[in-house]
Length: 263
Ligand code: UDP
Ligand code: MG
Image 1 (tube, protein in one colour):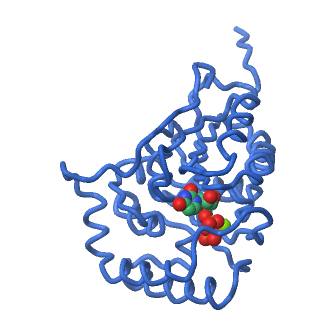
Image 2: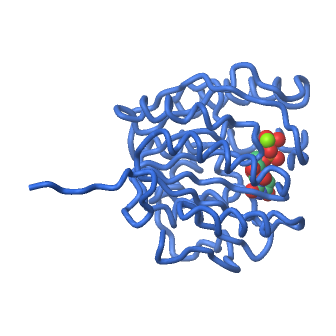
């Protein structure tokens, strides 16, 4: 019997194996170049995928750009938040909607390099969590890089998971280790620690990091103080992330979803 199978990179009505989750807040100039780079890499993989963009209440024309990308690419789904809820909420919405067995997270500002994704996916064959390590980080040393070196060292001590760069968004998770998590605001920074409670095989892979070309960072030095507070309470945060509670506040409100029967 001969069965005709279309190439996987042109099929969008099969269940995706890989879901890419990308939060965007005021990233209008980055949307199209990022989608272009990402799609070129994913098409070469030859595995069924979907891209879930979360517009986290952007005030610029990010959503208009996403609408154009959605219209041109059946792999794309767009979740638009009613207002800015923060990066953790965006990841949480992406995880809740992802259909893939593997979830790839990435920033959408072109600082993470989609060309690293195939290597992370290779390592994910025998790991539950694969974290990017921005070894040559392209951010201001004193206000960004140095605080992150200290925070990561403390985080390793507190969580028992030795990673150089918890804060790198470029990661791959087996869906089972993130979809059940109850995330509170700010918790996207500790996803490896939280997710490791549901699957322990954690790996780290050196990834490329690029300076921001368009748009601006959404964070300043004040983030460091919040991180120190979180690290001190990390054991409690880890417990809460895997304990269901009825009265948890809603993390986000969705205004609109672009997806159709085609994807
Ligand atoms: N982001 C978001 N909501 C926010 C802040 C940031 O969705 O409230 C997105 C942002 O658009 C980017 C990613 O999260 O895609 C990382 O943000 P940013 O580049 O500002 O952080 P940095 O790289 O400076 O740590
Ligand atoms: Mg950035």
